[in-house]
Image (cartoon, rainbow, N blue to C red; front, side, top):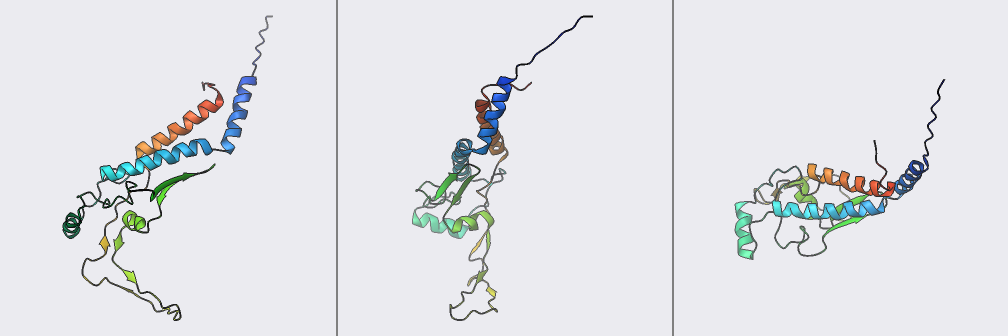
Length: 181
């Protein structure tokens, strides 16, 4: 009877697994790349004038277009002075840590642009009179304050693919080039 013995030296594989496990505990490096990428992608939406899903933003109203023209602004949507789009400085920012990446703004109107606004405003309550009967009231003139949602935050299909690439590249580098079969 013939016998064949195969010995597998798995030290390389085990070392790669150990490196992957250690790297998975602190994803600071790829999260930093994710944050940078998402910032660029988000800023590009202001140039393309489209939501993450590719749908075009609702056009600006005729009244706002006229006012913007008087004030020296162009016809771009959500871009007047460039604060929200990041063109004029640091109001659009990206942060990351070992477990997350975020893109956003400290501007209060960022949420209004993202989700829209129906023009309803809550009455301010006097600090001394905590009224429970505060009721919403419509804006003073018809149409004033209404703004359709123009989503600028979120992930496109391309963004998702790129994020997978970032993590795949990171873990491939950590594994030291060990190839999956």
